[in-house]
Structures are given as C-alpha cells and as structure tokens.
Length: 99
Image 1 (cartoon, rainbow, N blue to C red):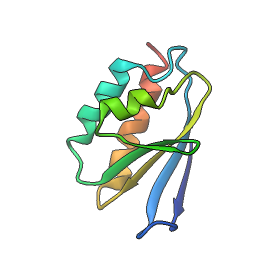
Image 2 (cartoon, helix red, strand yellow):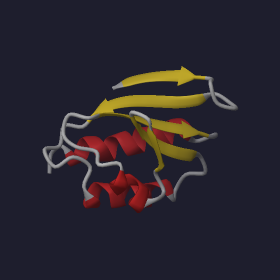
Image 3 (cartoon, rainbow, N blue to C red):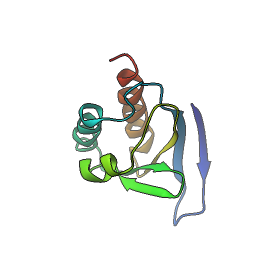
Image 4 (spheres, helix red, strand yellow):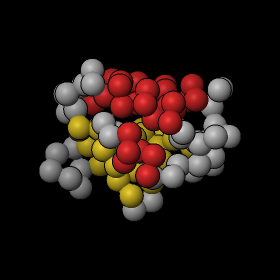
C-alpha cells in the first residue's frame, strides 16, 4: 500500500493505494463491512478504480465497481478522521484476502 497526499480537490485528500489480493475480489461481505465501518467516521470516504469513484457508504456503488482480484484501488478520505478511516477500510480489504 502506498500512502500519499494530493491536493487536486478542494482540500488535501489522503489516499492509500492497495492491490486486491482476494480471489473473490471485493464481494458483498467485505463491501458490507466497509459500509458499516464508514458509519463510525465523519470523513467523506471513497474507493477509486480507474475513472470510477464510489462513495464507500453505499454498498450498491461499491458492488457496481466490479472490483476483482488483481485490481489496484485507491482508498480516499477527506476529513479530520481521514487517516483512521482509511486504515480501517484497508484493514477490511486486507482481511478479505484471507477469506
């Protein structure tokens, strides 16, 4: 995973790039865990794959991204608790690789 900070949005947005190692990609169970985890944070949280950017609070948006094994995605968060939010989402995605 590669942490970085970019400022091409209104404010600085923290980003972490992660490769999907789960053979099943990002399926319904980890997607629902991500959505539920987002409830604990005030930051805006998005997953980005290529040109597609999805609100991580929406399971429909996450599932529609079609994230599969080997894809590289960006976990993007903006807000005072962005770092913690990103670390939590990355932990869920990494945990899904062991399912």
